[in-house]
Length: 350
Image (cartoon, rainbow, N blue to C red; front, side, top):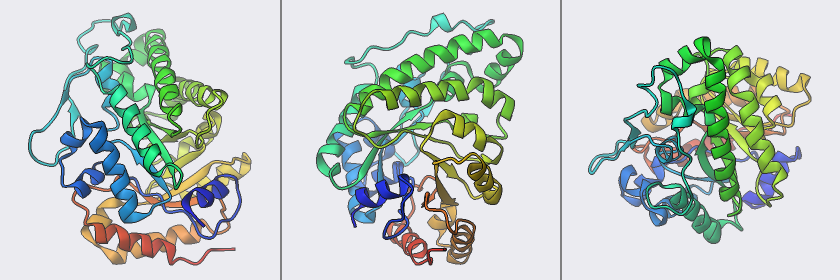
């Protein structure tokens, strides 16, 4: 059974020949090419080559295209990004265009046009197209985009945005509507290449914000993007909302967004999360994640125990896949291959 058939079955709620293996590979793909993250992040050809190289090495069941996945949209909206001529550091946002405003004014944000050379939106779309042309008939491919809440954080600065939610919530909603409209447009462009869309919202995780903020300022806007993709008639894998951290208290909100997958980091109360999904008769797929730092370090005792615990807690779950947090640049390939072996050696629970 190939990756597409295997993953499709699991997302449809049917048992496959084995549980899919879906690690989070971004800058690690650059390492496989012997390139820096900054170099790969500015080339559609290299970004595509990195995703394909990872698939050739690990034969994982879902491939993601992207390097500095939180920077693309923020940069296009006006944030400056620092790239590194040498070293393995990931590019990062270094300016926040709305930070100095006394009162938040979303009207100061201009929505970027497609087909311009002053942002990397077209570059990412091109990279997705290249990956689809190379391996798109073999495996599900997902394009990555930072979500509208994370875009708002990068534009305004986290502390300022939290203060705005207390003092001027209507202004925050103005900004969220703008970043969401931008996200809907970009998601459509990605979807037209045939890739699924992963929406990343790590700025929205607990304990950075509380469930009330998540409900008001994240859920409706994520739902709007997911619904736009689903209604677009694209022949793509289903959209997913991905964020790390402890999402235990947020599971019922994820159900409301319509996401097809959530990531369960190692600090999640898995039993409680599973119970919440069952009570709501949700068809969300759960990616059980092991700490990637353990994999990088080759701490196989803790890795084995973490995988066995996930296997125990996920017994009987058809909509479950193996995974880990973002694979580091310096993780040796044999380590990730061994992690895959540990995962796939677990007996399937009844």
